[in-house]
Image 1 (cartoon, rainbow, N blue to C red):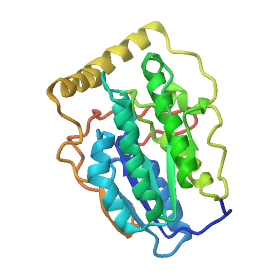
Image 2: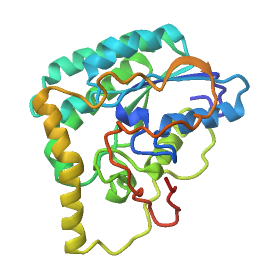
Image 3: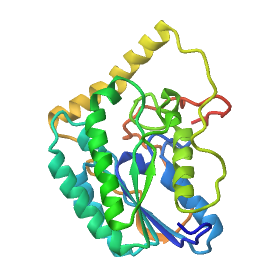
Image 4: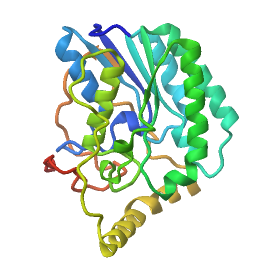
Amino acid sequence: MEMNATYTSLVAVGDSFTEGMSDRLPDGTYRGWADLLAARLAARTPDFRYANLAVRGKLIGQIVEEQVDVAAAMKADVVTLVGGLNDTLRPKVDMGRVRGLLTEAVEKLAPSCGQLVLMRSPGRNGPVMQRFRPRMEELFGYVDELAARHGALVVDLYGAPALGDPRMWDVDRLHLTDEGHRRVAEAVWQALGLAAEDDWRTPLPPTLPPGWMTRRLGDARFAREHLGPWIGRRLTGRSSGDGRPAKRPDLLPYEPATAHEPDTTSEPAPHEPNTPPGRSPRRP
């Protein structure tokens, strides 16, 4: 990868991870690593253009059907594709079908852009991670194969202990905090051959583990606000992204998101971010 390369456009494809949940802005919308990356690229390149087609809850089949052809037609310098993880979290999943759809996506996107970027997504340390680890590692192994076959970059977040730290994760235990998204943006930035701002792998400062009562209260809140609704959607065949458009559907000159009415349909309830030590939480 050419050091300090120039990129004039970025298209982000995927699900809630790329949409930016749970990096919540004061107006209730989400920012996320892709927006942070776009802002940094725009600061060094005049007329930089950015589109973010990602929508929360999307499975790899929906990403292929709804986003991939649109992204390929944009002919961007950089396209990021992160998908398939939602499939692995389903009680039943056909990993052969996931592999086939991911292959279709990469075969369409790789020749259409200057550089395709894939990821081995991070996972929060805990029982959920342990349960689904074999599926995730199967998915990531195939991501590596596709990248080698099509000249794509792979940003390996899965093996980074810092991003497995529960303090990097929102109370829903599925989405990164603002600090987690900042580190992902830095990881992609460096993978693109740009000068490091810091070491995104640096562990958070050690702290005393929360007490038994704090953990139980956190478990109860998680079950009430996130696990229960998630199970309800699975049972009824609904998704948090149903009917939701992409937040940046067109490849246009980058401008920071403007404030608007709070997103009252967002999956997580309003909350104080789980902010790592040394960083001040944003007030809603």
